[in-house]
Length: 185
Ligand code: SF4
Picture 1 (cartoon, helix red, strand yellow):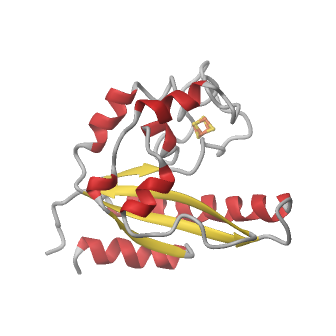
Picture 2 (cartoon, helix red, strand yellow):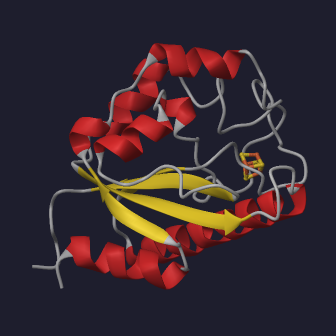
């Protein structure tokens, strides 16, 4: 089966609510997005191996992306009771991260080279080991799309996938780049 189809099937099996092709031309690595990390609004800057500055400079991490020619967008949408329904927001985030790891683990086991970009910084450990010790799970920890300088809503729109799914919903978006070489024939 072609690799594209395998990854799409696995993504759907992982439970994402929306899955779509990521247009390679939609990947614009913007310094201004990356600079927002430094404002530390999410309290992860300089505290996590997957976030700046530990994840590498914009030039360094976008050079990694140059090796991959295709990508898939992965979304989880949750329904909110009202605009302040924090419990449902957190539950949607938890489900999204769980699905993302399920797919990543499956791809890792398959040996396919991939480049994952998460929604937000890594929260696998209660407290990140940065900077005193190496990452505990380097094969599962992934920098966010924002750490790559990606404007997530634009990437979705430029790829033909919505970013919002209407009032009283919240959507988390990640992506995975993969190799253009189809080794499955
Ligand atoms: S897996 Fe743990 S140590 Fe590694 S980046 Fe995530 S939180 Fe930090």
